[in-house]
Amino acid sequence: MLYLRSRRPTLIGFTLLSLALVAATATHAHAASRRSHAQAPGAWCGGVLWRQETFSDPGRFKVKVNPMTTSIPDIAALAPPRRITPTRSTAFQRQVWHLRAVVDRYRIASNGEIVLILFNIDSGRYMNAYMPNPSCLTPKTRQRGAILAARKEFMSHCPAVTVPWQLLGITADISGVGFWNPAHNTRGALPNGAELRPITNFAIDFGCGVS
Image (cartoon, rainbow, N blue to C red):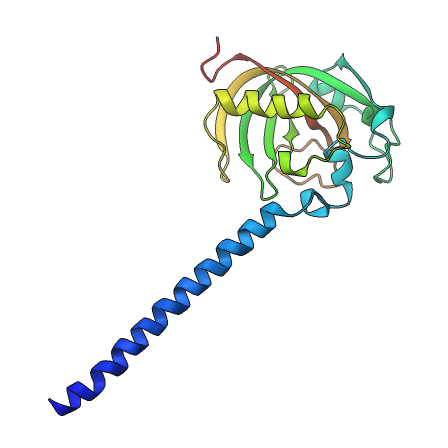
């Protein structure tokens, strides 16, 4: 009995210490998460090209915002620049493009972007398009209101975005700025790296409760 009495305070103290460490770790992780979401827009929003991705780059006023109608096969046929830089060096990057496509699937990326994989039925081609995280937009972002409205339109009709891919299959009219992505190995990417980024208009024709 004397042995048990001497051990009990030690066990209780160890348990309380363990619980305190777990609580402190959870609090630290939560605080770190809040700091990451509260930080000012910058490279965390998309690397060296984040200003193009958020339509806040110095060349944004060279972009013709009156949408020009195109298609995924037409965009797939474009030749990419030999070097992709923060400068809008091609006509594709200096135009807002409009197309009608199926949104095959979607997900939310680690930086808060909503990634859409578009699909053209006639050609069987896929293409990526992006809705930026509102926290990554800056006061310099051109067509800020339109970009936010496009994301709100999508989110208000379709199931909440998740990290894993979700199949969708809706038909939509989509407008977005031409963008060259140096990475061609992401799911849904065209071989030439062409994307619509950011999306500036999104209207559902069929699906997600719209008919």
